[in-house]
Length: 488
Image (cartoon, rainbow, N blue to C red; front, side, top):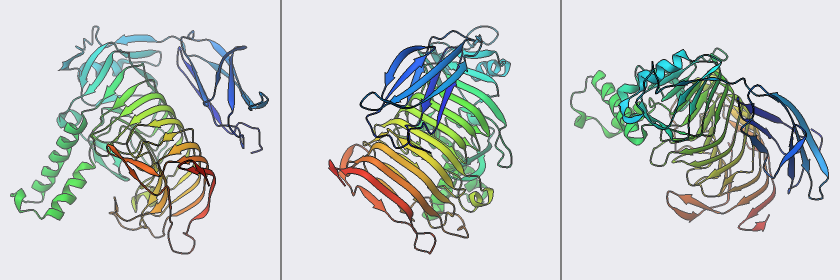
C-alpha cells in the first residue's frame, strides 16, 4: 500500500444513524486531522478515526467525504462513501398488548420479550422502553433489531434454570454444550458459513447479565451433576485435584452475555453491557461484527472478557470503554487439538479508540490454534491495565499469530511470549506455534501495571518465542517506543 492512502474504511447505518470509520493513512505521522463532510457540508474535524451522525431521516441517501490532513493542513489522503439509511421501522413495544412485559425488575419477562422477538419482521424493531426487564435466555433471529432505550435495562436473572436447555457453543477453545447466553444469535456449526444475518442491538440503554451469582450457580450445578454421574456420593471424599478439574470443566459451560454463533452483519451500537456469567460479547465462526460507542463492565466476574472474536473474520470495535475483570479484548481461534483440526483462523480484526479502566488489556491468545492474522490496533489507552498488550500461547497450541500492528497506543507493558502456566490442558498439537511480522510503532509504555486495585512496577517489554527451528520469533519490530517518557 503506497503512502498517502487510507488502507481500510467502513460504515454502519440504521434508520437514523450513520457511522463511518477508517484506518489512518499509511505511513502518516501524527498529528493527523480528519475533515468529515456530509452531503457537501463540513460537519466535523476529528483526530480519531471515526465519526457518527444521528437524527438522520429514514430512507435517505447521503454522501460522505473524509479528508486526512497533515499538521500544515495539506490533504494527504481521503475517501468517498455513498450510503442510505434504513426505511423507518415499525416499533414493537414489549410493554403493550399482546406482549405486556412488566418491566418492573421483579416479574420474569422472558416469554413476553421472546414472543415480541419471534414476531419481529425485517421492517420492525423490538423496543424495550424505560424500565427493568428481568429475563432468562433470549433467542434472536436474522433481519431484526432489538432496541434498548435510554432508561431501559435488560437484566439477566441469576437462576441457571433460566438458561436451559444447553446449546452447542465454544468456550476456552473447545466446542461443547453450554448454558444459553442472555442474548443468543445464530446456531454453531464449524463446517458452515453464517446461519444468522443482519441483527442490530442498540438504543442507549443497558444489557446486564446475572453476574457472579449466576456464574457460581451454573458452575456448581454442572459440577455436582458430573460428580453424581461418576457415582461419588460423598463430595468431601473427592481428591482436591479431581475436584478442581471438575470445577474447571463445569465453569466452561457458563453462558455469555451476547453469544453470536455463525453470525454475519451484527451491529452492537450505543449500549452499556456487562456482568455476564463469563465473557460478555463472544462471537464464533462469525463475520462482519461491529461494536462501537459502548461501555462494557465485568469487575468481580472471573473470565469477564469484554469483546472476543473467536475464529471470526472482518470484525471491528471502536470508541468503547472497558472496566473488565479479565481481557477487554481477547482474540481467539480455538484450542489444541480441536482448534488445529477445525482450522478456522481469526483474521482481519480492527481495534481502535478503546479505553481501559482496569482489567487485563488486549490479548491475542491463549486459544489461537486455528491461527490469528491481520490484526490492526491503534489509538487505544491500555495504560491502566494488568497486561497491556499480550500475545500468548503455550507450546501445545500449534497455530500462529502473524501480521499484527499496534500503533499510537498507551500500554502498561507489551508481552509477546510463550507460557505454560494457564489454560494448558488438552492434547498437544503436532507442531509448535509461531509468531511473525508483529510491529509496534509510536507506543508509550508505562513500565508499571494496574493489578486489581493498585499499581506495581513491571518490565515494559517481554519478548520470547519457542525454541525449535522455524518457531522462534520472526520479524518483530519496535519503532518510536517510549518507556517512562524516554524514547528508545
